[in-house]
Image (cartoon, rainbow, N blue to C red):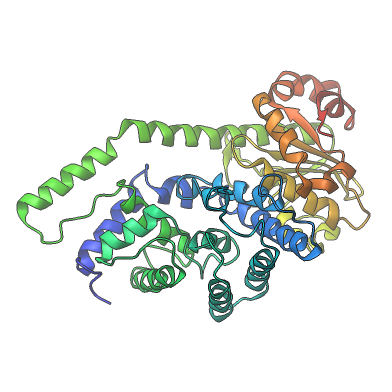
Length: 428
């Protein structure tokens, strides 16, 4: 490829390298965020629920309260790049868009689109589904739907929003317009070529490419001048220095690091408490190497899940549950999802995967562990129609304050799950 639009290979390579190092840009604050990967399965599971509701005729004719609202809200909760992703799906009554709520035929077309993308595993299959949706001419339903597809096919589908389009146009000199699938697909093709050229600095996961374009379009990553001069390059370096020194963004980054550390600390409390009560403990597979208490979070914990769980169809999701307490018979006595600031929705979905995937039905107790202030959020999520099965699980809310105050006395004098049950609050 050599050049990208107005810039040569060396300039783009240097720009990507700098982007990867900036703590306020999406590569460090979102793409490398350990919680990011956990969301893929739960969002895909949510999209399957949308398809099931449309097929069964139970989706309804409103966005509010639907399974689509649940899963789109989970997408919008992702950091920076997906903020505002729900706007495209909110019902605009004056314009009567997107027209998938009042038009049953369009609703079914949207369901077929999601199902086709979920069932295929090739680029051709995804493109065919997009072309079929575009041919349906559903008013108000455009390329923003690519944000949903990204969580099904992260190596095939580029996320989409205004900042990404602006970034692509600024980088390449293109004139991509919002709202049209053909324009989006042309941008995707160009982005794939750039991603292939700079793969060693980007990723097979197109989230990295999208984040790079997003930061350019949002003004977080100034571009070098199109025609390099000593004076203009100096001005660009000054812009970069200003970005690095952006106090508000740095405070945000600091807060996000603090949130991740708090999440790990609570996992450590649960690990130590479970072991003190005589349980074997499993720590989420993507958290095992986190530093905690002078060692790794997974120190003293199981290296593999019991055979019954390893053979479950939902084992990939079960491995990501934050903490499991496993008894002597290799059954899950208690499952804990720590939701410091991440999506309550995703945690509930992983709990459901465990409950529905257990050979002997319900597997012990299920706890959402979160700051006290998030209790109402947890109750609101559990009340959604998408979580009707939660009633069978006896899902409970365990507030940080109770766990912090009582964990040491429980470790010394407690037996079994009774002390934890006494601290937790039913969510149904």
